[in-house]
Length: 386
Length: 119
Image 1: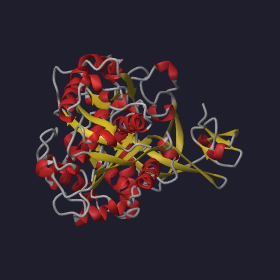
Image 2 (image 1 turned 90 degrees about the vertical axis):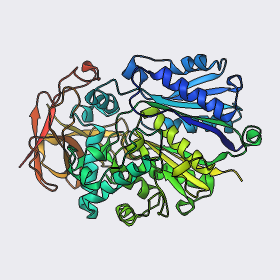
Image 3 (image 1 turned 180 degrees about the horizontal axis):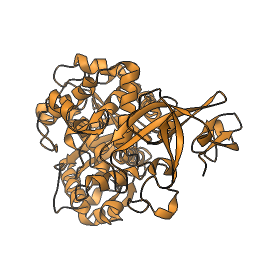
C-alpha cells in the first residue's frame, strides 16, 4: 500500500465571519491550500468536503460540487463527509483512503462550517440533534453531557475543579500565538472559575465557542510528494471507531471507547506508541475532554490526566508532551466540519517547521477528533518525512 | 405511559432498547423502569438550553438495579437539590420539552416521559 503524504495545508481566520457563508469559507481555504501545495486545480482527482450541517445551518446542500466549481476543479470526484464534530478527522480518513487505495493521485480535503448567524440555543440544538430520541426529549445538550461527565470525573478521581480550568488557561495561552484563532488572548484561572455556570460544574470558559471557518489539506502518494514540496509529512497511522450512540449506556462514563479503539488502531498501523508522540492536538470542545483523550490514548493512566496538567506536562514551551499548541478548539474555535482538518493543519505545520512562535521540537504528531460526546472518533498519527 | 427498558437473551438490560443487544443478543421482554427507584450516578444543571427546553434544566444519569442487573437512564430532575448517590423515583410528565420548538420533527418521536424526583 502506498504511503500517503500531506504536501500542503491552509486555514481561514476562525471566528465570526459576518457576510461570508459556507461556500465562501470553503473556497477561501481550498484556493489557499492549492497555492500552498503548488498544485493546479486540474490536478485534483478527489475532493472531499468535511461538513456537519450546512443544510441545517444555512439551507445550503451540495457543497462539494459547489466547491469543485468554485475552484474550477471539475471533473474531480466529490464527496461530503459528515461525522458530526469529527467530520474533519473522518475527512482525513476518507482522503487518506482515496490515495492509499490508488483511486486518486491528488486529493484535496476541505472542512468548513458556518454557524455564528444562529443563536447559541439554535446552534446547540443543531448539534444536539445527533442524540437519541430518549436523550433529545430531556433537552440534553453536548455541554450537558460534559457537565455530567466532569462531575463524575472530579468526584471519582478526587480531582480539583481548578485542574479543568488549567486546561483552558493553557489552551488560551497557546492561542495567543495563532493568528487564525478566534480568541487570541490569555485568560486567568480566576476568571475561568468565576465565569457563568453553563452546565454545573462547568463554566463558560470550559467550553469552546461557536465559530465560522474552514481548513484544508492536500494529500498525494509519497512517491510524488517531493515533486511538490521539499518538506512534507506522512500519515503513518490512522483509524476510526465508534462508541454507543446513547451516552449513558457506556459502562464507564469516563472512558471514551472510540478514543481508545481508534488510538489503538493508529498506533498499531504506525508502529508507534504514546511515548513516541512529540505533540498532540486533542478535541477540547470541553475541558474535560482533554483529560478523557489523554487517558484514552495512553498519555496518562485513567483518572491521572489532571495530575499531568497540574504538573505542566502538557505545556507548549516547557512540557514533555505539548497538547493543543494551536490553542485547541477552546481558543482557536470549533467550526464543526473544519476542526478535525485544522488539527491536521497544526500538526502538519509543527512537523514541517512552519508553526512560527508555536513551534515545538517534533517529528511525530497525533490528532484526535471526537464526534458527538465520544460517539465517533478518528485518531491520526503524522510523521515528518525523512 | 411506561418507561420501557429492554432485556436481552443474555440477561442484560438497556434503556432505551435496541434491535440487538450486547454481543448480538435478541430482545426477550420489556421492563417498566417507572416502577423502580434509582440512584443518581451524576447530575448537572444546564443554564444554556436549546429552544423549547426549560431553563435551568436539571439533568441526571441514574442507575436502576433490576434484580441484580443494573441499567442506566438519563432524565430531567424535578429539582437541582440533589447529590450523587441520592435515591430517586420516576415521575410522569406529559411534555418534557416543547415539540417543534427545536430542529427535530415533532412527529418523529414522543415528548412525554419521566423526571426523577428524590425519594
